[in-house]
Image (tube, rainbow, N blue to C red; front, side, top):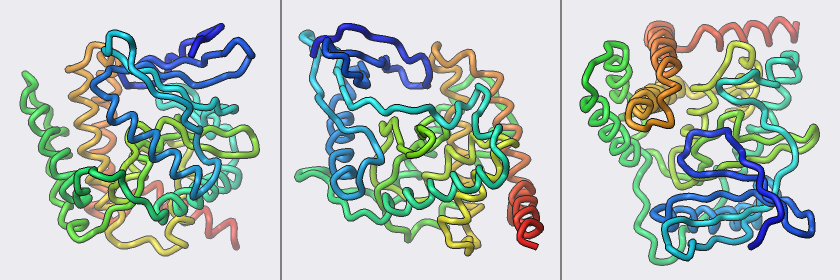
Length: 312
């Protein structure tokens, strides 16, 4: 596919290059150029997105094409362009924080309704795919790899070791069944045009535990967006939060935070986030203490109280 114009999209943590590309007939498409080693993973992503659009509807971009470069060192992936703006980025001012509590909750409720459709979708992997692992096995491997990365660093961080210990909560999902998950549902990957909401950046899509989709939402939660997160979680569980929810999501957030911290020292492109990574670990240790001591985070209890007062 030939393009008349390619505008770089500098947001994101992956090593791939992203563009808003315009064809010669002025059609916008999303172009991603990545390492050819990830071609199979990108092919599966396209396969899944087609199934999602067929079974749920227009909640994501439509895959257009996927091909290798002539030297077979890169892949070129194109999808339909989604108009609108992200709900916010982790290190930039977040549009959500400019909304009032009710507006945030209403958006969160809409996100939860989409998530429930995704998680309840009947989906089968392509023929000849490896047998899917259980959510517990998937995360056990991820946690082991993260611990190896951490031990390979030339220094230790007490708070990181506290977070690594939260793998003890893995027993709470040992018998859980996998479902289709987005895999990285931060506000940066939710596009809103003022009317419709769509999810983007499905690079981590796959079969996993449904609560894994709350990881990025909680990891990148800002104090000004608590009502949004509260509305989403409360709607998802129909006002009946499972008692093990916070320990399970704490486990996910803890290991992901340590993994992100290690990546800041492994990949030069992420070195600028070293300070944030250390800050995030410290904040999640405080969250861990609240959940272990009181059963839920203080911000959640504040939202429960705020919601009750508004109803009264």
